[in-house]
Every structure is written in structure tokens, then in C-alpha cells.
Image 1 (cartoon, rainbow, N blue to C red):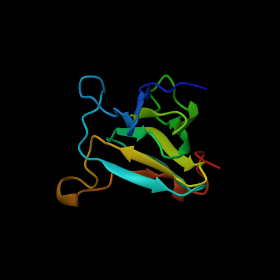
Image 2 (tube, rainbow, N blue to C red; image 1 turned 180 degrees about the horizontal axis):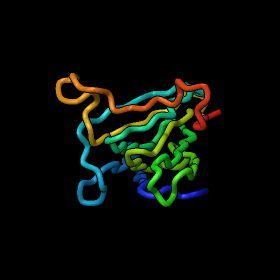
Image 3 (cartoon, rainbow, N blue to C red; image 1 turned 90 degrees about the horizontal axis):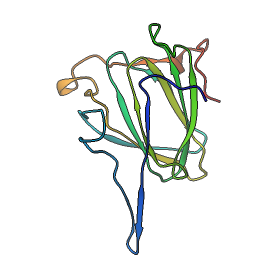
Length: 152
């Protein structure tokens, strides 16, 4: 798997006890992002979200379960030493991790679990800005049939 400069993948530790389990997902003293908002999404089995990229926003995804995804990333920053590199990693219940994706890195994921998959995102920008009145910082490659960024 080729690396992409600026993408940080951090294994999440799961702590089990008689009540269930716990997983720390973010620490301001360890993680290199300052979230502006957060959201949870559920993706049905076989469904692809993305690929898309941001010009200014970093995404900080948490894949802790339930379910697994194939996460795809492509470096689309012309001035990057890893330009055009592609990474694919299985993340989620079987590989709990957080993934920091910097601006200019195209990303998308596909649920590969029978009952679907959950993800959390803590991006460093507000969606549509303050009061939801700004532009959306998103280039949607999934809407371009000729895109070189494809998830099957």
C-alpha cells in the first residue's frame, strides 16, 4: 500500500469489560485536528460514499464499528511528493482506527458489512460555514463518470 503524505492512521484501543466496551476516539493532546463539528453516519452494505475532496477542510474520521468499510484515498495535490498515490485500507469493527485526511486528498468509502457500517467525522471546518450560509467545500468526483477516482 502506497502512503500518502499527511494522512495519519491511528489504531484505536478497545477496552472491554462486563458492561461492554469503550474506545477513546479523540484527544486534543494527541490528535492533530481541532474539530469544528461532528457527525455520525450509517452506510448500508454495498453503498459507496464519495469519492470527494476538500480544498480547505481536513476530515478526522473515526471508524470504531459497527461494521467495516473499504476506505480509499488518492493524493490529488500536485505539489505533494506522494501525488497520485492511492491507499486502500479496511477500517471499522475489525480494524478500529481514526484517519486524518488533509485537504486535497480524495477519499471515499464503501460499507462491506452485511448489516451496514457506522462512521464518525470530526472535520475542522463547519459544513457550509457559520449559520450554514457559506459555500460547500467539496469537489464531488462521484458525479463525474470520467473520474479517475473510482470505488467498485
